[in-house]
Length: 165
Image 1: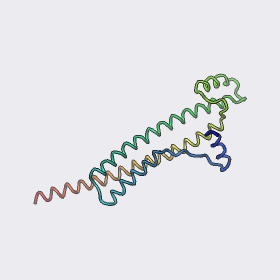
Image 2: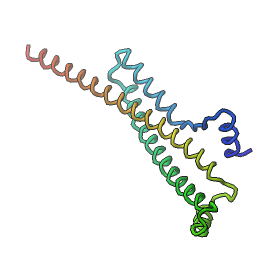
Image 3: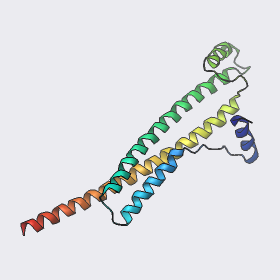
Image 4: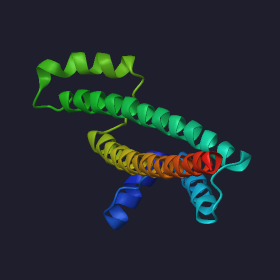
């Protein structure tokens, strides 16, 4: 059984489209949780925190690359769906062009518009979830950096006060 068949069966069985969860989401969540753990326990500097910050930046870049790949896949799926629709009997004038483009794109001959429609829905849902997680991580990181900056500014003022006395 291939992926398309499984998607069809699951969709028919429970009426929902299976969503592919991007593995980068779990990594992103783990790093944010680790940073939050350190912040809750008063750790505001040190190599552990710095390493986590660097890793978070790296994972956020990877997540953005994943979003870009999903966008490319969505574009390709949209093009394939357009050409599959052109194969419909109601549009005979577009049929030869559609067949040509589908062959160039190495699309399986047994692929249907409904298959692509389900895959498009799944990819869009996956993209939405990944985008939300990335946005949340960026927001958390910005909030953390703001708090860190305030803490550093407070320490700096306290140091200046103690030196002037």
